[in-house]
Image (cartoon, rainbow, N blue to C red; front, side, top):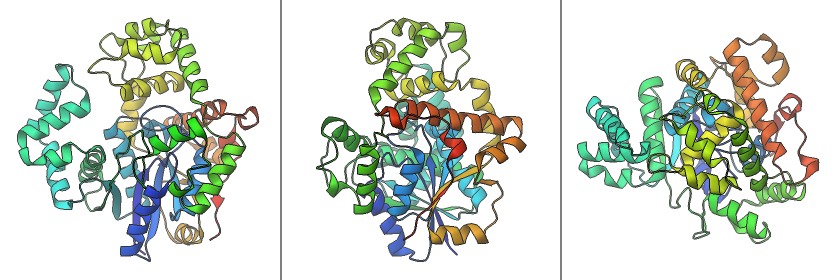
Length: 401
């Protein structure tokens, strides 16, 4: 049975994601589509708009067969570690093909650029540019462009750049895994509803401003109904609550405590402490931001400050990779695959029994997943949706077709 993997956030799941799955099923109608999905927090930093169980349910309703959580240590990491975590988890599951959306769907070109990106000369140029104050993405684009001038189409495309990180991870950790790029026509982080396949960013902004009543065309029908249900219950992110929590934590932590956290380098902990005195985190972030420290990086650092993710823990994650896969949702096809397949990593149905037997690193990773869920629900819109402990109580959701 052919398995095709996707690494995603689905924040939230929309027509663009459904289109990706439809393209896969058009070419491989019998394939099992397995999604490794970020949990309560996402890669750009901060909580997802909806809970991981709600988003996983939407994904299965939208065409996925099985959704497994990418542990928080990887889901909140920079693009390279995010990609490595997803690829290593898919490899452990026995997935043979990774599919991803990309503005550039030329498989050979993507693989060529990814190979060049890993060369010593390019990495040396990238480090030089980083030392000159550039952000990682910009430094990598310039370093690759110097070695391969024809790569501009790839380098100018945010989804294609993430695709390069997937391919680099495959070359290192899963050399027999194939890729299936699917052409994407929307900007992943565009803030306006400019097309029939808008970005998750645009949809979230539209919901914050006007609710979801006029957004039905942008979601599959079943998914839209689930979205309305979550919004009615207030089980969706209130970003103001999260911003206030970040500001409170920034004021609480001392510079020596910040310095131990991931990405806090070059004395930034002192600038962070200064930004914490602003009346809002939005204003504080403006004080801290620089050419090298982009908004996305600062947002990840804010997440690290709340979750307590230190440099030592990231080093262990890079070395060990994901140590488990938590099952979030599946349909009958996914259930059949689970019953017939043996993974090289444990797949979790129940949190507590697995935690009890886990080693120290795995326990810390699980603890972070649970903490991320608790912090996310604390920032939901209605008090009734803010209960903690969901990771201990929730079981995988079986979705009947």
